[in-house]
Amino acid sequence: MSRFDDSMFRSMHWDRDHVRVDSFRTLTGKAKATTVVVHLSAKDGYALSDLLRQLHDLRAEPAPKAGRTS
Image (cartoon, rainbow, N blue to C red; front, side, top):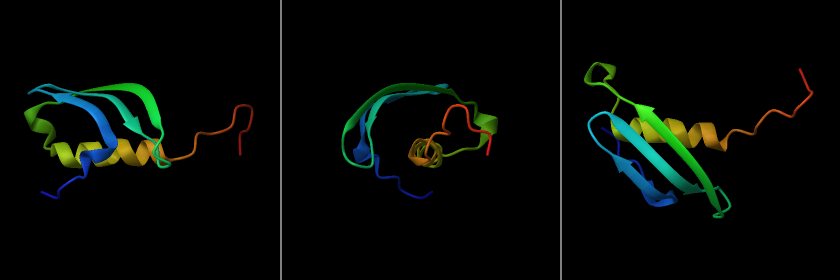
C-alpha cells in the first residue's frame, strides 16, 4: 500500500464503513471548506490512501465552465 500524504487534509474521520473529509487545502494552500462522505465496504478493496489520492486528484481538476459544451 502506498503512503498518502494527508497533511493537506485538515479534518478527516473514518470508520469501517465511511470516510468523511471535512475540509482540505487547495493547491495554493488556502483552506477550502467541503464535506465528502464516501461509503466503503470490504469488497471494494480500496486502500484508504488510494481513495484519498483519488479525491485529491478530483479536487485538483479544473471545474467545467457553465454554458460551455466543449
